[in-house]
Amino acid sequence: MTPFRLLLLALGIALFPAFALPQEAPAAPADKPSVSQAEALLNSGKAGDALTILNDLAKNDPQTPRLEASLGKAYFQSRKFPLAIDHLKRALLQNPDDLEATQILALSFYSSGDFVQAVPLLEKLGPRLPRSNADGPYLLGVCYIMTERLDDARRAFAQLFSVAPESAMAYLMLGKILVRQQLEDRAVPQLEKALQIDPGLPMAHFLLGEIDLYKENPQVAVVEFQKELAVNPTVWLVYWRLGDAYFHMDKLDEAENVLKQSIWLNDSSSGAFILLGQIALKKNDASLAAGFLERALKLDPQNFYVHYFLAKAYRGLGRSADAARHFEISKNLRNDRHDNERSMLQAVP
Image (cartoon, rainbow, N blue to C red; front, top):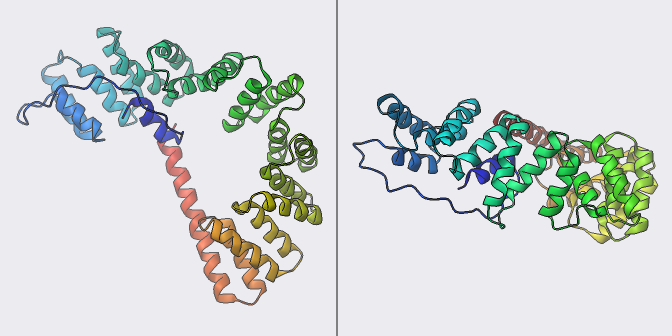
């Protein structure tokens, strides 16, 4: 597995076809530890065992070929990025054309949050990567965002997604990625520029509405969602989020109507059913709420919100044992999610 794919797996980013890297020679005999043995261990995900071999080699024969590159790779896999950076810099002094070491050094800077140092390496890698590999260009675009080079980021993503760099779609694309990076305030001007170029551009008003809803401005979100529906009234997602905005404004009848429209367009998503269940609970109709939430449960059994609101519905129906069971499931799922998110934050800088 290539270095880009290893990092992207850790970050939860969709993977693209890998590109081939030169393979090391077959491992030396077991009684003679070598860089090749360490590389084999690294390829098996055993970074700790590889480091044992590599550090012994560094102590006894520091001039061993590819030792510095392999140490950098091992420390990268161990998420010890400062040590990885140190050894990879030495490796590139020995061999400036080492493609794998250049990749891993770029990823080490990226993972350390040192986007300024990652940029020139990713720019250098660009022409050397196969056209089929999109991981490097994506990371370069993110680095441009993090270093306030938004025009460069827009051009990078435009090329990656095959759209004209000055087009409305390019600005929309950048705005969408900024939202994904939780940089909503920076996304707004990009989305507004996209609409200035093309007032009928689909999904731009939707993203603006999402930002307004996130900022707890449901009234403004409603306006944006309605503008989106005027452009394209066939997108179930917009009706769902419009229903959410109405729900936050306590406009339950309006919310119920658009949520049903969302379901008529797509009955395989749990979101609208959950909100309809909440509306029914607010209207003191536990039986109707249970029906909606039981449907949501079939679609999304690991959603702790579903279990929580279904428990409230069952409690309203006098089904105490079922209510207690679903409250407990909801609690456990919430705790599991919290633990997973904490582990992810610890793993990914």
